[in-house]
Image (cartoon, one colour):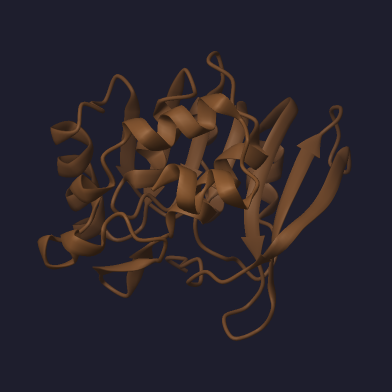
Length: 206
């Protein structure tokens, strides 16, 4: 899967490729979809949500430039697959899922696959506010599309930290963006548009 669907499309970081080979994607999809687990396509996981196709997971991870000492915040745990990939590359992952049933599904998948709470801390909540008690983060990855970048997530970046997020409304063109914090201050960020994407909307409890 990795060579055909990830490496051939431009993801070259050896650590990212190794993480994609290590994490068993079939453990993070419902049993009815397991025969498609290693196809390069999104799959439904219930509650109106999907697990992203492997190439998109790899591209987002690559864009975040994770390091082994980084603390990473993930918004939108889903089935737990992206969190597991990030856990292979970061010091610790903190993940927020707004749908309680999905949070339980992800927690079971992660634990069964060897990613316990010492590697991935998972809570149920509204990701728009981030996780201020655990901030700052060197990496923030958002797996659903807000109409605009939540200010709280930018403010919880460490200096030099990277936020990778798909931005845009469902049905419109969405753009995967990387925001890098360059200094303290509310406007000290560099924004890069990376590629067009299609994600489910980022849900809020409000």
